[in-house]
Amino acid sequence: MPAAGFHCFPLSTSYVSLQTRGFMHVTVHYLAQIKRAAGCNSELVEIQFGTLSDLMRKLAAAHDANFRSLLLDDVGEPRRSLLFFVGDNHADPGQALNDGDEISILAPMAGG
Image 1 (cartoon, rainbow, N blue to C red):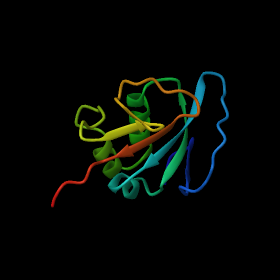
Image 2: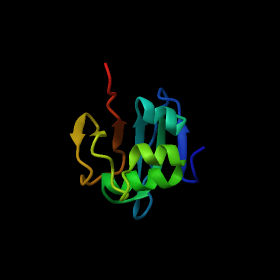
Image 3: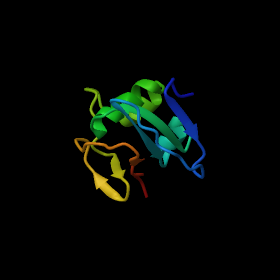
Image 4: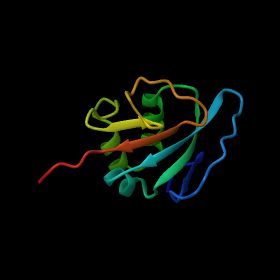
């Protein structure tokens, strides 16, 4: 179950972003095994203004060890194997986020 300030919703739910001073709300959509580890399809998250990396560290801190290991490497940086999208655009971990952004996280599947 997510920590305080995190709200899991079914993927079909629509969201209204409410901005408070110094903070923003973003919606995070989980795909593939990250969705299973998160225990939900998406979350509405309140964070201080920052980057995608900042958001990944906050998400990792709010979930269990399995989720953290999928999201962050041994030094606490987002795993290079993950794909991030802000809206429909591919994003790197250093990208600044804005209130109301929708972020998708995908861990590509391997195998054959």
